[in-house]
Length: 205
Image 1 (spheres, rainbow, N blue to C red):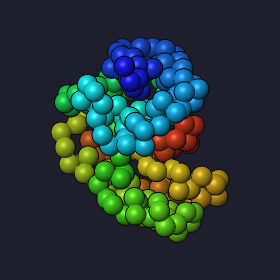
Image 2: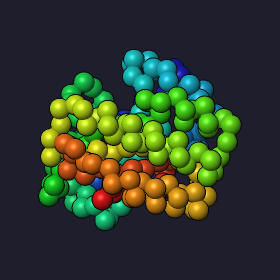
Image 3: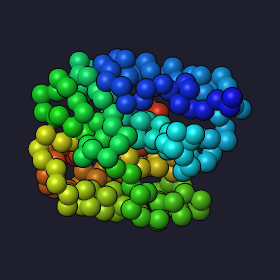
Image 4: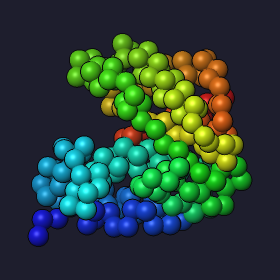
């Protein structure tokens, strides 16, 4: 039987401690690296669904990676929490237990709402794509603010950080976001990160 990513990332929606979630994700990534030829096709076709009709590759590459980046940062009070990802149709992407401010996390992709980021990713890298990324982050936030959330929610926005891996480009993106004075709307806080493992996380003022 053909192995799938779900075989090495079992029970993705199980409730875990943050430490447990981090270990689960890192262990899975290590197994992917050790057996890359087995999973390369599924990873490349991340928009497709697996044998259980789940977009596992896309979820793991993007949403789970962004969540991992947020949770490993000790600045934001998640270290002693329990986290329960939701891949279904409930009105949240992650349930949080034990945090002083948040009960839920909603996760949104910048690329989900604007093709500019995807088009630019094949044409250019660096300073020239910072402005479009900032604009599309704003659009993604505005769309989410128009829905029914409340102050128990934090919003986690992730973008294609592979376009701006160099530190000066990342610093420019952070500087522009902080200067925008973006309203939180219905959310308690808004976090920005890339989906690549270890991408920096910024909390909007």
